[in-house]
Image (cartoon, rainbow, N blue to C red; front, top):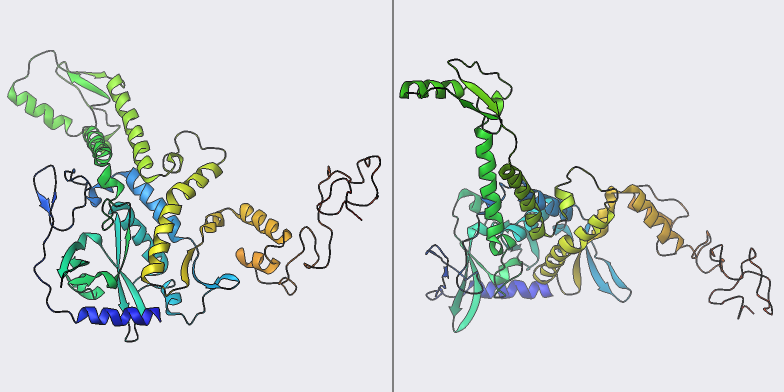
Length: 450
């Protein structure tokens, strides 16, 4: 019913007359030019953000983005519904179930999810166009690159609403079936932390200096590699050189510059000398600054540095770093995507579930230990545990076990008691206590065993 009502509301919106003149608020930047559309800053004056393509030229930015987006895209995803017995898997007849398998004709769910996470982190916003059929049911979700979007606040009959103008008119937009304007009821809009509640801002826009500093140091490093002989030493001559000799020397040195010419031995003549140099304090500090720049970028994306820059030693135990990565970097993004998907795409009572337990899929021993604990505790059946690791079901594996036994739940099987449990046969019974058997659950030293 909810989907149908949304569909009819959208049809009424599409029958509106031509919109009145739009009043656009500019976002002034430090270099004096203004960006049309909503003010993305919170305080008026802000530094122009680093272009996404330029920020991704830094390996640390790309590494943080790839590890976050690919990890979230690998999580098992499903649609669940609220029932009297808690949340249960949604029936396959629900149209939204097909969306988590293939949101649109060009993308699978992992590809769609990777684009969503990348846009959310690099642009601060992710926008997807919602297509519906004649009944109002959603048939596809098509991502819209945020670089193509100009969000506007328009006033229609005294009511303000948020719309999204598509500024990029290319064959790609026509192939994706995108109109020139999308209404707020026709999109799924996920936002990063916002200053006005309407448009999100990425960490790259908030911490411009960190990224620009990394780009400047990358330029310096690139220049050093281009001038390949500079770090290794210098040439000196006993006499002053005229213009002809300088030109000749430059032509000779050109054959020894660059990484591809490393290892060539120059032939020196006319009293020339080559003096080898070592890494000075300035260069050593530069290398240290580059490493610190990587740490700063990892801090922006909340990715543990050890996952991006391993250094000389690999930590013996990666579990604390993976736990911090899941809790600080992944969980907030997953929560945003689930909430926006529930609100914009799914009918009432349905929810998108992205199982972060998929992080364990790369650690077979951890998965096996977790499954064994849950089967022995009566939380899951043996067949559920077998399906989790890709094994076929067993004939008698659909029954929950009683805690700590091999018997079905309800058969009164005794639980597994630790060896040092008070009252165990291996320990002397406390004087004055009745009973000589195993202690009953919830008792101490056989108190209440009768």
